[in-house]
Image (cartoon, rainbow over all chains, first blue to last red; front, side, top):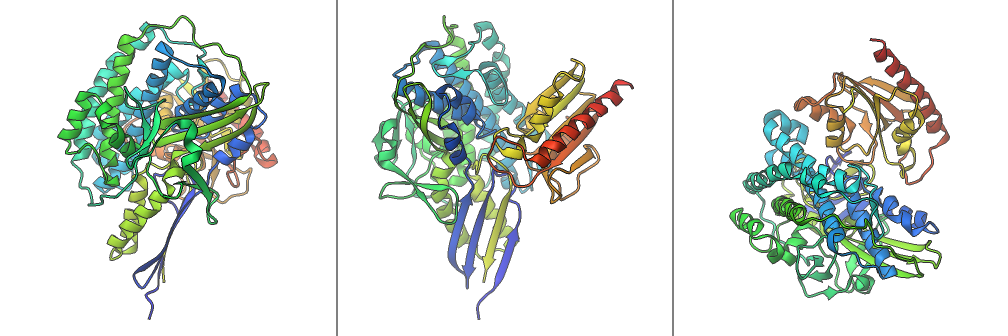
Length: 430
Length: 153
């Protein structure tokens, strides 16, 4: 007799985007695990064809409400690569500062309102706020410190509009940037408190054999530039991305699944950046990571919340460093001439590596575009994590099983479509 | 932030999900300058900061609750939401969650009115469907009337 059970949960909370997870279990054997996402970048790639290259930063920024800066940065770096433009000095520092703002706000949101409730046993951040109001308020204030950087440097808090190919439309004065300092000083303490708070959670044993892929830069923890490296020996220029990684269509999903050619799944995001760049963190962030019980590499995806908290501390310290040394540049952008060519850009979105490629016509219009978001790159890894978790929790009743599976998806802070937030979750047993 | 604020929630690149922002476009220039017109992707903390000190906040969002596309809901934001009502905007902590959260941490305006414009499927695109486009025009008038009422108080 077969053991026939079926569970259907209509809406996976606290995950951005539309997608679905289906798990099929027959006689306590896992038959299939599918994690599907709906992916609007395909639309955006098509939409940009024929439009002026100058529009790409603003158009792609709308792919995701949570990480517009990442899309803008990958777009402008790709254009600058195509045109042979180098952005250095204060303009380069401002881009890092803007990116720090996005990491702070995105990580704070995920840590406090989306992920912590999993560990503390609350259905949502709202439910958690009823018992832990100060904690939630601290998270909201920390997020706002990040928002303030994005609003000032990016020109607007939501969908920043101040970024352009070559630099910015307008650069802030030193005095304007200094206005951020008192709150960032507070944020530094809050980030330390955050690391202590989340490192006290109970984490399931789940060390994985990931291939961690991230940018790596000689002198800095990576945001905008560097080589693409992996924990298993890859080391390539950003322009070589398509030689090493391939997106394959999977029948059940609109999305393309990324793989390392002839090797398979890989992992992008905070755990990957941390493993590949630990020594580039500030000494203080390293010390706090050790205090929190982390090694120089973390292979348990459930502990990504602690690594995110360490990255918040790093981003706050890096913001303070940049503001301290800032001198307003004479020109807000580097002048350039658009030429026919192809350019590649990859930057570290809060959720991981975000790759853009553009081919440009001689009149500056976009001939074609390729966008590979971090969640698409993590998709196969998420499926394999789900299988791992499922094997160990098959004995749980369906509602608890669903919860632990949802939790393992949230480890990736997945921006499933960077779009609508419906997600159908189905666990089929039979 | 302003005493009275209108917030249009949505993503202009996601078809009918642009309903909220388009309401803001079509309202522009009509209310007195003291009324802030704000576009939002629905990020909860942005919403909380935008409305927390307001006397009146009017929020317009796309919604999927199984109704006919183009139909309009008007809800007292502090009076609770039907369980079928969930925000269809391009973000993860939506308007409903932001209101719940605002209640928990005392970050709500004195008065909160939410207009929901029922949409069908959310798909990438830069145009509104005819039904939603017509509903947007109607909501613009309803929001304007809402603002006039408080203006006379």
